[in-house]
Length: 469
Figure 1 (spheres, rainbow, N blue to C red):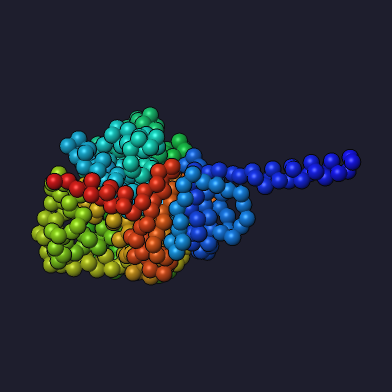
Figure 2 (figure 1 turned 120 degrees about the horizontal axis):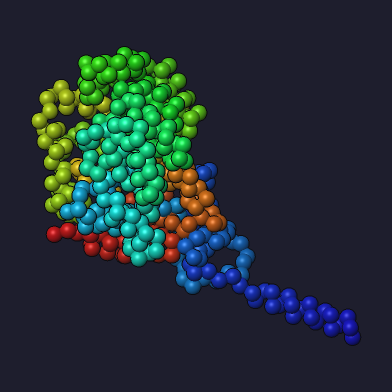
């Protein structure tokens, strides 16, 4: 009798265990999950609760799991939400509403995180950042530099101008008080000494630092000072030229200007010098932001008619007016200057491919925002990936420059950069495989941003609601 009773109890307990289920808020089932770390594509189910991925299983695994809602991703491709690693939220108080409008464009394009590389709308940006984190505002997670650091009479409004050691201390104190996510240094007016000192002092405070580089210093000096990220390829080109020191000396003596140095540096490109530079960048864990799409766009302003661009309707007249400076400059340039710019554009595409082949970590960034003519928030990140691939970078490597490297650069790999347990549930579901054709990043079926789910119809509504009359 005792044995029979014991067996009966075991059967009841076993039966109860089978009935126990794990319940999650959202299931994405039958998905082709692209694991960017390895390049593998696996058929898996993803279970999400509280804005994080809780479980990732094979589609044929036996598990007692339920979900409040389900997205059937049969035939679809899932990967981490895209990152645009170089944007600008700026333009003064009169353009605050226009910049806020950009946030919807990012989500509509599957961009769940942006890196704001300096502007003059810091207080508004900080408020948006908080509202987005609370899911009170639709938009991407924002990592911002706040105001840029530059020298006296800085080019960009809102910049923190430094001329003395005390100025550098005050600028960094200000940025710490603002609780910025990284520090951005610009190169229009800052002295070589203050530039290098600012990098060193920034690193002492534990910040990630990125920026331009005044041509009055060498790339080696910049890296040795502790620079984490180089924005744009002008400065990499300088470090790959056999005449870098000679050109640097001429800049310091006022015998040559920035644009005048371009042909001299491009013509002195040296494979051996370049390989040494690539090795130094790689060994020092320096990231490079090529911004190829904007380079191509600006290089051909004299040839391409943008008046029918579909994204113009989202910009508004205020933003469009800021485009005029670069447009006039392009149209008023000499024939020689125009040709030099186009040659430089071609050279930069080849340089980006060489950097990637050498193992230097690239960051995909659009440089979209006010003043950057016809480089539109949202869609321009996809164009950046496409230009990378056009220049020989594989689709997989191009995708890594957006999400995987973006998370690495800002030390956010605990939360972002992969489709795995514990990561923030920022995901994009594509209709077709971007590893086969990078243009498929634009074929978006759904976007998941934390606990928010946007269907294809809702993404189109975001675009429709972003039109500015």
